[in-house]
Image 1 (cartoon, rainbow, N blue to C red):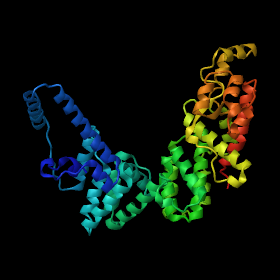
Image 2 (spheres, helix red, strand yellow):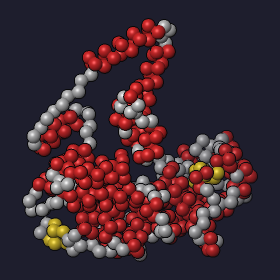
Image 3 (cartoon, rainbow, N blue to C red):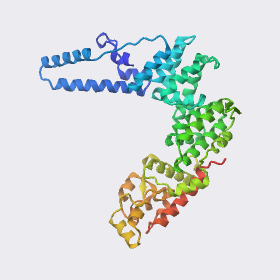
Image 4 (cartoon, rainbow, N blue to C red):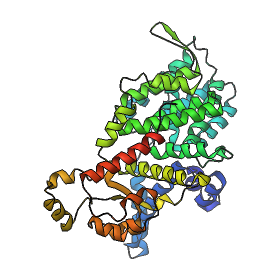
Length: 455
């Protein structure tokens, strides 16, 4: 894109417009960044030219700019004869803050070792088209699912050592084909709207949207190999379990660092049987076996822990998660009361905002209410971020209620809401600790049913 749209000589008619190039080759984030950089410098130069009144001043500025670019900028070409020399240079430059892409180095290395370089180049072009800016994270996750957890700084070295290890007997062309296949799965797992999923049932599409909305990147190595190796039904079970498990794990605030290695170990075993500590572990063949492995975690979000965490959790710094939970509870309640419409969401939830029933900034009427009830105001303020003190409202109704007292919120918003989760809020005259705990218990009952981890 850089050559065709910006580097080609515009006066000889060789330059293509960015819009035409995008229509022909598709939209890419990396191309947008290049276009943005180009537009930035064009706009700055144009501003400078506008500030100069005469033609001579404008020409003088352009000549001065050209001279500075030629004199102050330098392009250095470094030729190496060994891949490890290239890697040493790569590490040195990265340590000095100019990051190079592992994907570029690895691609060039594989092309140089290919039996059919032209085809290898085409395959890598397709991989770049599929992943764009996700390529860096994909290579790391691919390695996690194939050989184990590695830091980004050591990824290139691990990849090269793997290819050059005679005991592995690696065919670089077959390896690249495998990377291409898994790159496609990696991409579509993060995009439920991709045509790849056309014809899938509504349950798996909903799970994919939940997976995307929860931003569960860490488990992608496991899901990629699960999608490739499991049957359609087994993959659906796996995806459902992972979404439910991760939701619980987040609510329980369990340590994330242990999951990366656990997901990696399981993904490797889905590919093949594995020897660990002199013990041969069998290949994992089903979602149930994945569940069994994850249940061996020292800290596991079982029902008792989830219940305790759900009741005490503060969503002050995670309003996105609170909104997600409330949305899913609302959909479940709607479907329960409308079984014939089980595949239909009643409303467009993108229009809804998170509403704090006891406001984040309560007005004087709230303060007076707590004083009359003998409730310490500091204690009351701690209730604001519990899930039982939250609900969903469309933006207009939320605007009407704002910081108002509970009776006014009912009159202006809750009494007019169509949401099932807001029915218990209609015509209230009190809102206190007991109300919040009761609402938390109701939401917890629904959550335990929605996010089951016992299958």
